[in-house]
Image 1 (cartoon, rainbow, N blue to C red):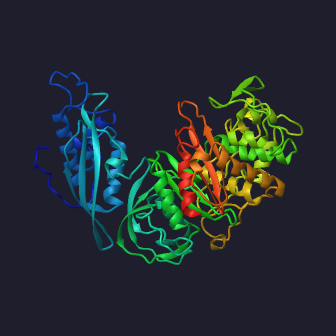
Image 2: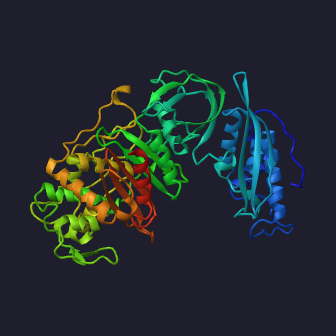
Image 3: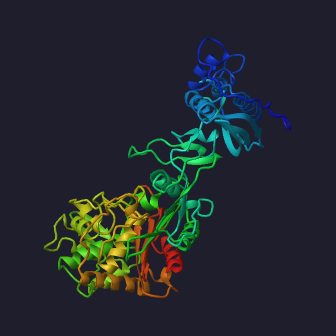
Length: 548
């Protein structure tokens, strides 16, 4: 598009031109197969290589002009996936009721063109202006060499992902005013990481909170892997509803610290809980995909798992905090050799506390075949004592409650050090720490159970002697062991455990860290973050410092 030239703005709802012959019908068919004649020479030879500046300009100009006019089939014909483009552009007009569309392109960077959309959303006699920025990329059609818009849902709106669509209607649920434990209002503008959580709370508890629905433009998401549709994401309000007040267990202070801490590391998540009650004080994620990995992640937790393994050893009389847990350079288990972190000095006379605070893998591997332990012992400890792996947590939003399967072979040993087939997330490990230091399993939760009558999961917890030893070993780890640097400067009763989890295909391990300070327990995960104290440790320490 030439500088200063802008396609005309024409109102109206999109019309789909599918029937009959003619330009529109031809271009839908040709675009599905990778393009028509736009990039071919007069002699019929196919263009190759990236589109040049002229092709980028011409393609975007034609696409924007058709989009503005509501000519869906023609706009779709300028993309490399006319079927999906046509469906979403149709919903843009018919379901989202967006008209009077005007598009202003920005300066292209190579084959990528940013642009601004200004439009009007009109529904049931109410209208509101809509404005947002997005971008598209022009690619070469694989079949004919035609220059085409590389179709992504984000072309239509930057927040759209695969399977999403746009809808304007009376809200499915009334809005909520979510507040923290002290009555402070929690908004996604102030606490961006809470956005998906607040949307889910509205979906589940909007009616119970006592509000009345309004009219909104929303992103409607497709069903996830569980088959349960994600909560709508509101984009624009045409008519205000009356929000109902929903009290959560969150702490605005802890949440603010959690959000600030995770922003320092990509692909990071953290959860803080109150061990004496199970209340979730903070949940934050820093991820491009918007996934709540803090509650729903399913990845190996590395050596933070040694809290559960140590409990199993103590509960079954294999050893105790001051009992033997030799730390050799390597340990063989059913044909597989396990080693410690590079640079760790062996200690054949080590106690369990010493091997725990240094995070010696071989010490735990050597002990998992001691009598009376069986292949099922670690699973039983996780389920019966820590409440993990039974798929019965009811936190108030979707969550995964860990997995510690009964296995044989090398994975039995690997499970003991948080590798193998063990899967956890920060919510699980914060709960593990809470159980370890109090001896009682209290299922974490985000909203009170009396709001919807749900029953919390139950587990018998730990004997007092086991909990006392775990707490002391975590204290030693925080003051003398692998967590010392991350926990430095924290006052009060503190303890921690570090973890590094190796993931197939990744050269850098995932960083894990869990710790406590008085009546606050927290756990964090940073994918590809390295050692536990390097990335996850500072996140946990920041949250404990603010929440304690």
